[in-house]
Amino acid sequence: MTDNDHVLAARLAEAAGRHLVDLRGRGDPADPKALGEAGDRGAHELLLAELTEQRPADTVLSEHGTAGPPRRADGRTWIVDPLDGTREFGERDRQDWAVHVALAQGRRLVAGAVALPARDVVLSTADPPRHFDSGGARPRIAVSRTRPPAFVETLTEALGAVTVPLGSAGAKIAAVVLGDVDAYVHAGGQYEWDSAAPIAVARAAGMHTSRLDGSELVYNRPDPWLPDLVVCRPALAEPLLAELARLERAGEA
Image 1: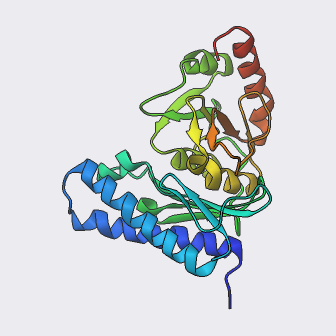
Image 2: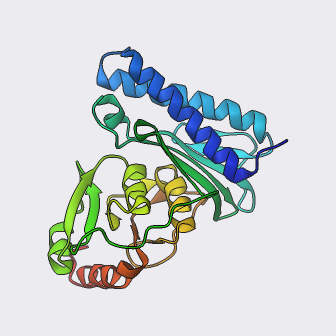
């Protein structure tokens, strides 16, 4: 029996996550940077081997390059990030790192899974959670803990929001899906593998996903660079996008 694409994405993300947890638990290498590099490399090799065996006709795109047949605009491409949040993975007390496995058919995401291995959580398009209610009176906006957008202070003041600094992109988008925060705003640019799987899961969970200007996020393009994105609860999309548009007109976003 062959796994369907949703199940395969979840199974592979979970397997790579277990590999990473085991590596982290062994405490070798002790150097945080070396640990992150070893984890990234090992998880990549695991995912590539499994996808080559399970989906030999499909292409694989990751931060480590491409594998399989040449990418086609109308083809099937697995977009993976074996370790999203290498820095956080190297800091042994942090949980905000992830494994991403997504499938694009043409330019459209059709399946995806995000593992949060340190929390023993796997989010998948096969069975996405649905959390639409804010946990508090003030919207909570996840931002990069090291490179938050320059306009974030103005944005939070306008919306009466608070910021929640987190590590990897996958952890931040997962926080929106799980209801831990209400939105994630990113303006510093990312590659497709940084967000494809989390965006697939967020869409399946009913969340709003778009560029900062409200246009659609498109994947499996010739150039994998994505300049910006926003993910939020549906009810927050209109005021959030309106404020982002105002900041853009004012030259602040």
